[in-house]
Length: 180
Ligand code: OFO
Image (cartoon, rainbow, N blue to C red; front, side, top):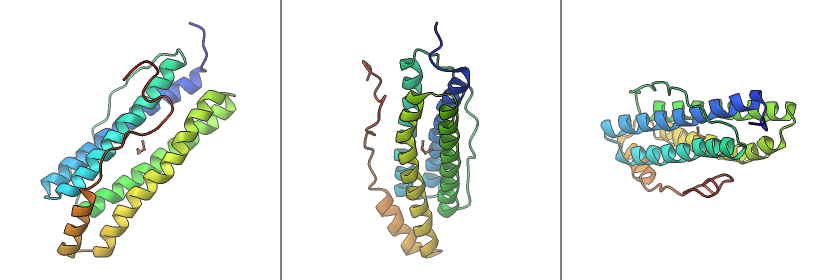
């Protein structure tokens, strides 16, 4: 098959499918730990986040296919299973989002170096999305820091977090052309 995507870019795109699936995995793990600790609302928030991550993975997957290149899936590493508190969970989520932003920035740089405008343009959706991803996780961590050990305050945050609903992201390459 004729190479439309350079090997360097394809390697990054495939790695990002894995990173986004890991994001889904770690947030599902955080949801499990939150529900185990009795925070049903924050667990719901994390489950919604995990669904978004699945869509992110599929955007990269669909883009690779649309470029007539091959998706190659790697093993997804094991996420941690327990954290100290809701605060440490949301702090870890925020750190993870900063890492993902770094991945997106790195890929933008490589797309530019390889003169790959299609990849560069697809990544712009993620550049914007990461601003939101960092802000959302930081907002949760900040609220939890403000209430501290006040049980009443934590329960209020939990109730509010439980109202988060999944909205299908409006993104290019999702769903894939001709697919659901
Ligand atoms: Fe895919 O944005 Fe979070 O990780």
